[in-house]
Structure formats: C-alpha cells, structure tokens
Length: 65
Image (tube, rainbow, N blue to C red; front, side, top):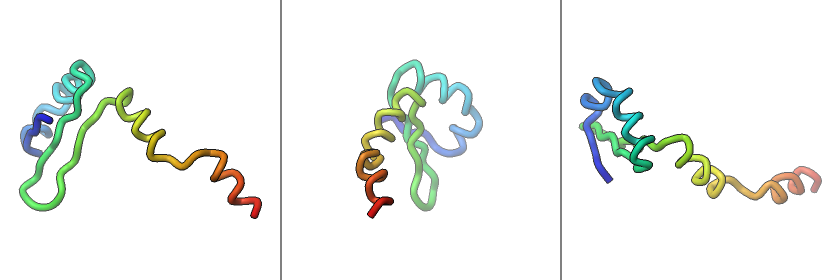
C-alpha cells in the first residue's frame, strides 16, 4: 500500500482522492505521532463496512428478547 504524509495529503487532498478512486487502491496517510489512517474510495468501503456489520437478522431479534 502506498503511503503519504499528512502534510502531503492535506496539500493535495483532491488529487489523492481522485487517485484512490481511479486506482481502486487504498492510500495510507501517516502522521509523526500516533496512529495514521487509510483513505479508500466509497465503492471499496461499502463491502468492507458490510462485512464488519453484524447480520441484520441478529440485530433485529436481539431487541425482542
């Protein structure tokens, strides 16, 4: 995965977003201290979010107990 610094990302955010979308590849954004982040396109994020969410059948039945 390609990585860029926070400073570079903040100066070129629109270009970074366009590259992530076009390449369909995540981009790590690093900071000097602490944990960085990963930029992914919305179309790449949707299946990740679905996989991380609990099944609806479990969440809907838990409330009825």
